Length: 471
Image 1 (cartoon, rainbow, N blue to C red):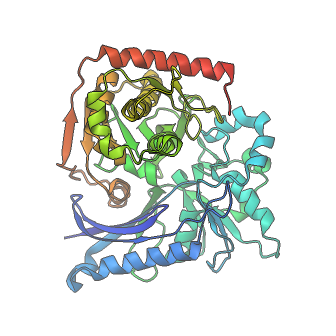
Image 2 (cartoon, rainbow, N blue to C red):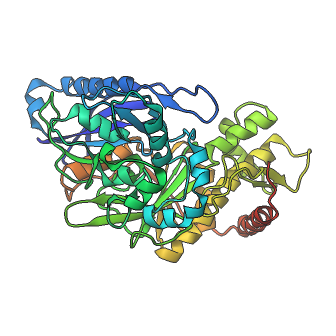
Image 3 (cartoon, rainbow, N blue to C red):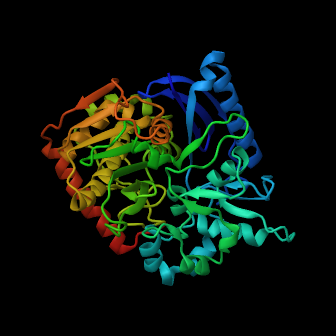
């Protein structure tokens, strides 16, 4: 029996998992890591703690196997949270904290580049934003003044430098693209973007394909054959994806993945790389909804009454005529990319019950998802949706998404999608990679009232954008 090791380093935890060649989980371990918020706009992690946790979960997972099985681990894949960056010395020692994707300390530089926003989107596939790596890398370069000239780059490159044998620092195309410094079509660092963001190319790792020989784990001798970003890897969690499917994860925020065409297929959505190898590249369309679980937290903070999550499933079935909630919590993501627009109920009233407000917020999440699905349908027709994440456990929410989209929705209880996806790529894309049997189907049903509220939601949202109802 051959096994594949997957290393999944996320914002809050490092995990190692072993899969057999059919996609079944054999063993796994997880360790939590800390996230600090020293001041508004800053979110940092201890890079040394992250590295130590990754090494520990690898060792713990392999040690959990009988001795005779440890020698049958044939390959390893590494997946990390995209847009987290740091500086490190040539010997692998961190020269800075890891700056989380949530960190926006370099927003001033981003604002100064507004005149180049469209060109930056065209070259990188991403809207100009302080959440991506470029501005944070420039900040790091300017903050380290001891003359050591440390390496700069995504978290995955730092981990590879410390885990693998090899003198050349490298990073995969999927993580490199999230730096907003890579030409998405040419899959190399863009001289234009490097100049605009003032980042020196010789401080960055070399861009290499997702599916690539990255060397071997120094302590275990296991070849690393795939490296990617967390959401990109989800696309391959059940093997070769169906191009007519969209993947939706609904957590604190929500994201949608669908097969893309050329590198740039819709300028209002994110364009990213699913995977690449020596022969070519597979692109994805991505959409982002900022206010999902965060919007329910906003409701709790604004109105009190405790966490509405435990009651939401019942309320979604009981409340038939909720108000609208113009959900701009965390800023509007795709396809509008607006910030600082004030969230509000429509029509305004102080008489709404906690149930009515909670249902309005929940429906707004579905409405924002549908706005992005409508955009994606212009690029590629969709036949079904797959949902995951914490809010997908609320069955009536999944049913509303099916009803509004007119598409069947399947819900998986799988908790290891990123790890499964990178393991499949690392294994060489085996044909008999098993999907999970633990799924539930939500078939679309007619719901004219929901469709009517969706139409009014879009109308009210556009009016507020045009009027500039900002905080």
